[in-house]
Image (cartoon, rainbow, N blue to C red; front, side, top):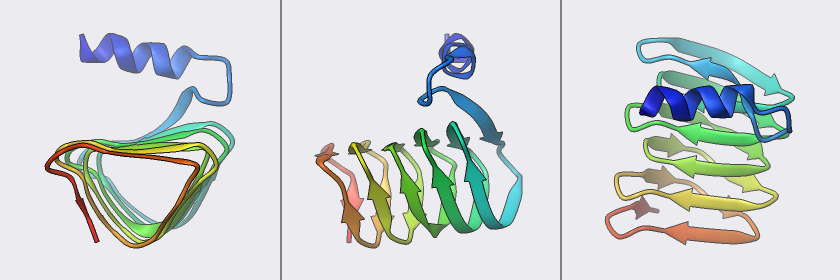
Length: 113
């Protein structure tokens, strides 16, 4: 079922669709700029810029400042998050940094410092 959800996100034609995936075990360093959404299940260091959705999977780690439209975080971000729309911190999420957003959802168990 998870693969069908990813397939739906990847095939979406709007700016919220996911067209970039950083897989588990992958390490990316530098500035990452994508015109659509991005999913991170690996390790990303540097800067992240996206006009779409950022999804950080449970195993995902971002050590970067992030500028996106929306973010759903299940993994860990060390850095500041600037989202035009919504930031959703899932139960197992850890965020250490500042958040600038219109709407913040923090589930019970999430860590925000």
